[in-house]
Image (tube, rainbow, N blue to C red; front, side):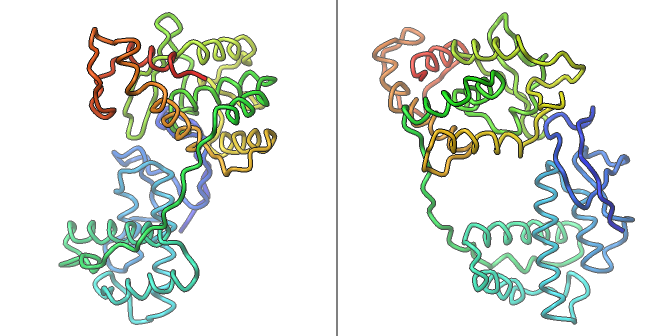
Amino acid sequence: MLHAYWFNRSNHLTDYRNQYFTKSNIDIKSKNRHSYTIGITRPHITIESSLDQFLLELNKSPAAIQAYHTDLRQFLDWLHANDITIVAAQHVTSRHINDYLSYLVNQDRTGTTCTRKLVSIRLFFTYLVSEGVVFSSPTSKIKKPRKESKPKHVLRPDEFQRIIGEAKGNPRDYALLRLLFRAGIRVSEAIAIRLSDLDMEHTTLTLHGERSKKRKIPLEKKTLQALQSYLAVRPNTTDPYLFLNYQGQGLSIGGVRKMVAKYARCANIPKKINCHGLYYTCSSHSSVLGMIDLYSITPLRHERIRRPKENMPLGTEELRKLMEYTSL
């Protein structure tokens, strides 16, 4: 039996909040805080029961679990519609999977989508092999579909200034846009920032990534000023999160994505810019202006060696100087 559930903010979910999943409920007995059950756990009698158990033990974020559930549920629906003899996971062969991938191609699905579906199926059968349900995975000899090469949309400095200019009337949006652009962080990390994560004395910010991973980043001058302006008008609520919506609650991932799209549209930017586009703009701009030449212009650690970008040993203060140097 499937139940609707609203994933709201709680003490157990600090990194992913305000996300809606249509068919899931929390398994409070599981050691994995991201796990959820679908009905009552049953042995691996049918392929559906195997799927239930796989999702229960999957150590991923709620968004990832929902994505795996969707991909695998679609695959099982296709299986039952095309081969009524399939009851258990042992009945699935590589021919079924190849036929399914061909079906997706005929439905004009992209190579990226087909690859994601195959990854979900492969992980599912890898789990079944580890559990002894099947002897070998039918995906072992199947090659990944070729992905399309999509262009990464990068903003020019003047285009970014136009987007920022549209948001200046809203301190929250202005601060969030500058943070996304300068820090190159994920949307899920941005909405998970708590007030206690912001260290104004040392001008640093603690980010909560996937699987409770934490990292600390410096804040350059313009981003810090934007955050200070937002804090001056931030609603005085009991909500611990830094960025709040009009109801005084933490922002959702969808809300941030809509905000970025709105300002790009208001600035008449024809490019398809999303949150990743801000990150690409940040990395591209920093690379052109400072990631290599910074060493010769403003030496860090008293070194003047021009190092490759991937080998640069940047500490917190060095990264802050780099962000200041390349700031728009």
